[in-house]
Every structure is written in C-alpha cells, then in structure tokens.
Length: 162
Image 1: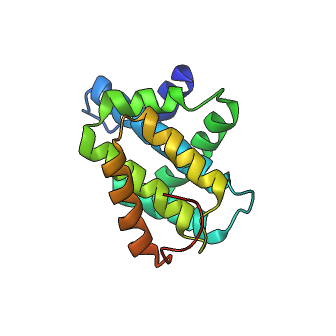
Image 2 (image 1 turned 90 degrees about the horizontal axis):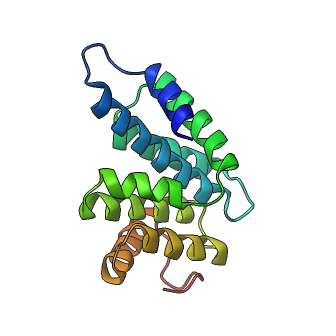
C-alpha cells in the first residue's frame, strides 16, 4: 500500500511542497477515501447518492479539483479491494489526525451510510468497528451519528441500532 500511495501522491504534489508533508496528506486522503468507499459498498446496493456523497465529502475535506478527485477515488478503490482489513487505513488517520478530525471522519462515514435513506445493519457494524479503530469515544460516535442523521434527513427510528 505504501508504495502505491507514494506513486499516487507523486503525481499530485505541488512544486515546492515538502514531500513528507505532502505524502502524509495524500496518505490521509487515500485512507479516508478508502473508508468512505468501503462504507458505500457495505449495504450491497451502490446508490448514486452514496457515490455523490463520497465525492462531495472528499472535495470539501481536501479541496480537490475534479482530476485529483477522480484519481483519488480510483486509487482508493484499488487499495480498499486489496486491503486485508481496515487497520492500515485507520492507523494512517490516527497518526495524521487529532480527535476532532477523527470525529469528523466518523460523521462523514455516517453521512455516506445514511444518504440513501436507510441505515443497514452492516453499515452500523462497520461504523462501530471504524470508530473503535480510530479511538472515537461512544459519546462522540453518537453525536456524529446524530449530526449525520439531521444532515441527511434520516428519521431516528430507521434501523441500525445506536
């Protein structure tokens, strides 16, 4: 994964950017995108709303232009398919992000899960797993879920547990 990330970000490093800083940012982008894409695929129904939500989140979070966004999503999909688990992605996020940023990632994952109008049990399970790997406490996890629920208009009684 690391060699692939290095190849990916070498295509997009701005001239004059410190390689270590740019590399860490690109690794964070790939890790975040991979988790968002995994959430999108979790309910076995790929909705355009979910793909749009992932793209919008990545654009807003990282300020990507359309070419960078397309390259990131393509690369992250490859990395997610080849990954043996989520730890390789969450460990990059844990190294690069503070607690508030990790809660924001959890909220974005919730938004992707909910944007198609329902919350699948598999999506809820993945959310708990990712939140645990990111060391996001239960209160922050629930607050992020509530903010995402309000943002997507998903009613509180729609399955998936707490």
